[in-house]
View: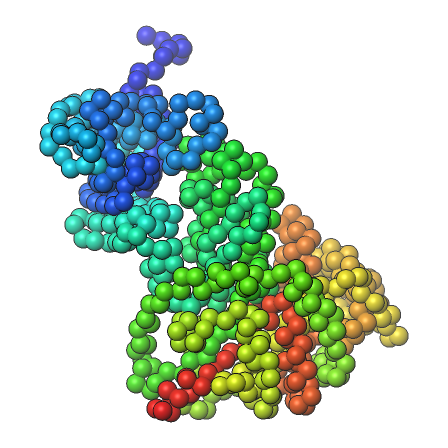
Length: 619
């Protein structure tokens, strides 16, 4: 027969091709089967792995299937989830296409055992490579058990691309973790060759699950997202900036309880942390987006991990707003902890605390009037009394070398240890009458607060003040034309980048003109930043190597310029300050929106409480 002639493929080959789109690895099959269990109303799901992750079984206590439904469930496009196009548009179940079981059965040896609550006997169906082998009645518990053996045994190409056992198990762990966050009331158990890898108890809260996933380091770090009266509801928790990681392994996104991946929402979430998180670090959080099913299409990808929104920009904007407001509400100041001598080598275990409801009271939500008042206070910030301290040639001093035997660790303590988990407003009220005691190494300000000692990094704090003054201007900055323009050189390889940078600098009040060759001249500066070391700031931006318009958005470039402007116009480490200057610095810091970190994400202050000191002195 001529192989080039058009012909209809066999059912087995069709099923294997279709399975390749839905089932790409063991974790894909586990995900589909767990979602079926959730759709069946299961309250307990057990996943058992064996044979290099190519064999596994999922057992649940859900509603089960009748003897008539069980074999039908293994047919392609057989489903109880939808029956019309209207159902597809408004689908709110995990699965709905009727492809998962059939796809898995086409590339494995599958056994299905199931029973409904009103059936006296259960049903066992065995399928190998898509072919029915057995369909009998037998005794079985209520619920469903799906056993998959020798996954991809009849598709050598797919089998060849399987990763190592540890990699495949890690992906299964990720799937179970996502589902456990989405359904905190459901119990999950994961075993590998009889050994328990993971267990989530039933009837937990989202906070319980997050504590278990992130570990003890997340204690006292979670900030609740409070949904507003908006067309899209955004709930969940984000962690304080100091919990950030170098990768995105701690980020979880859900739409209508469905785990998804979205470059837009990930970028939006991370943008809410800009200026309060260290560079190249990623925030942690579990964000749940709820909206009308008609406004989101979950049927755009075989694995249903990607979705399409009717109004993508609106959804992203609301996520950014809710996350940013939760950060503005919170007190992000780390509490200093001085450990006991005997505990330094081995940190004491952190107790678990129930933080449910801590951030849920309505009066903690920032109102528009509060934002207006804070902005008004920001505009009143007077730089005059310490403006003369901004020496352009003084580099930041390195942190002083510790000579004391006391070691200070930074961490946010659990609510019970700090008496109350304070919002930003409550924190500032708590230290409203903080009195400067002096400087430590001319770098840190020590101030007394009620039953506490406040330590402030003077450069980081002033950097935050200057950054917000630059960023939140109501109008174009007043320009100071320099009587003696400032000339500076750049590296020959940076001339092109400097030309690209000039319009961004001009938009911020820094007019730079070519002066021949590698030389440039600064003609104007913002009137309130004339003491800024502008050449050093410009060179730092050039050295970032991110000015290629193909990769860097204009707003991103300007954001980086503003951060560098704030840094080079701020009080330096190593400068002596008068008491009046220290008082003004503390008051001006209080007027900012994100007082607890500098624009690069470093903390501006830490708090040492009376209780911590009492423990150190054995009182």
